[in-house]
Image 1 (cartoon, helix red, strand yellow):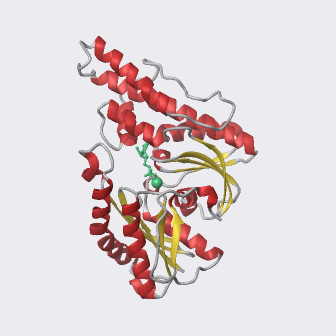
Image 2 (cartoon, protein in one colour):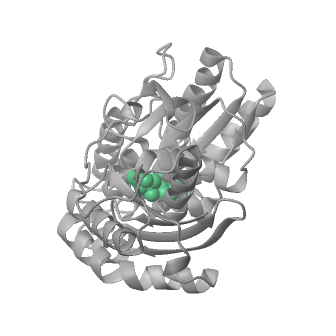
Image 3 (cartoon, protein in one colour):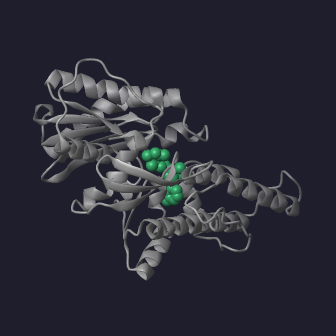
Length: 346
Ligand code: KG4
Ligand code: ZN
């Protein structure tokens, strides 16, 4: 079975074709980072318009790379939510139009389920159950995954998501958008510990997280450093920015790694899967690798290119859903779900 996957929930247009026996055949991505950079964050209306421009050419590229025609596709998976309503509507509209014309099912996928199952793209034999650390721009969650559609929430952030904290802190430090890669780059020249930040809720004894206080702590440090450099409008020395970025990265990754290991302890499971954009962070990976090794457990990551939003994870989740029971071809109507709790999935 060949499944075309379409992702348009935020600022990346993603397309991919998977074969349920042969795996990922082709995928393509268009990032809108340049489009939103000047605004320091995603502008929803611009995002929707750009998805409209990019989606069909990108789909043609994917099909050409895979050496397939649209008529060879057995189902079309698309992100139904959560995400930006207008952006989701572009992908959902295109997926339903193509599926209806071809007489094949359109499969609605939860964006986070896509992230959660993405490590199976490189490790199709990965056995359930496992613990998943889902860390993206909108989510920081620990889930117990017992199978496709069987997800139990173990812990969540009480405020900002980890990726959101990276993005807001990068903005504070003048490092630009998206913040995660910018902070990781700046941290390479910095020394953690020169400016001390807290490790929020690391010792709370549960699996909850909180990252908004960290951003406030960085803000206070930035103010103090500016005053030392000559006044509240003074530019921060490059070394101070690098040191703050390094300490911030150290703090977030200490908390994420600590909580992920605590979730393995709590569930008694020995496989950890990391998904979502922050999963691309190499310092996080170093810490998790070391911690699971000490514990005799294992950790599985999607390839770095498939950590952030992409069409492959949507196509893959669609193929798994199709295997579990093919939906009927749909009529012309469709909807999107900008807000959608993962635990409500079946
Ligand atoms: O999963 P994703 O592409 O989109 C959402 O569903 O949110 O995640 C994007 C988030 C952004 O907040 C970005 O700053 C963060 O992932 N990110 C990183 C890194 N690469 C992307 N955070 C830390 N380190 C990275 N290398
Ligand atoms: Zn995502």
